[in-house]
Image (cartoon, rainbow, N blue to C red):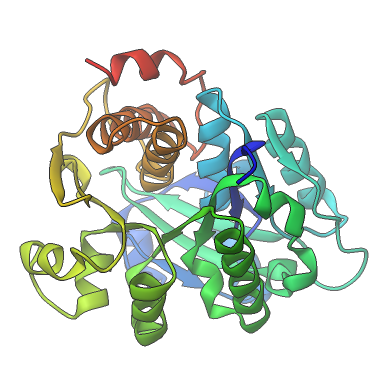
Length: 330
């Protein structure tokens, strides 16, 4: 097997986040379920945008955030996602490249606009996402560059994309290329509602095709249709090589290689916005695995990266994360 030229390549929805502070009353009035991600159409997106207060626009998308975090750690990262040739598309392309991530997917010259997500942050730092997927729904197998997948140590797949038929084809193509070249595949379940919509397919992916699984408590419980974390933990053991299960302020549990590791949440400052916490945990964990760290150290690095991103508004790191690498060894 040839040496990898990328540590991780990710495939996901290329989205521009529009972040705004709000309160629980606004969520209630608009019928929004706190802490969830809801798919909306362009009309609903425009209507909500008119009702929110001052906002900050920045590039987002779950897998893209993870790849930006890997680059901030000093890793070699690549990204595959679809944007339009419009203002938001150019913003996304600039931001991800400026973060140090290779992004060569051509912009669509016609069709829907670039995806955007209204991220509403309440005083308890919870985020409620309302996402218009735009042109990202057109991501298909033709956008997957075989050479990029073959040369990446790990291919990282964003569960949100599983709702889209052509994106499923892209996923399956990437899975096949990665495994044919002796590489590993990671999947994030993304959202409990994604799991509910595609449970049987996700179970098949986890048990037969995925080497590394990321999920939070709600997602893993939904996958196995249980009410408690401990029961879900027992079910996922042995279903894939490694499972990294995040538990917010309780930290994370890492299962793999007949080992279980409890990773405490890192405390490096106040919590401002939990947007991107899971994405950046995946950044640290995947960086660690791709650099030969053991599971416990990879988990600690994930916790440190997550702690940085929840200390400010937005889902991308604001400072280089490389100093955390040495700290994770302690």
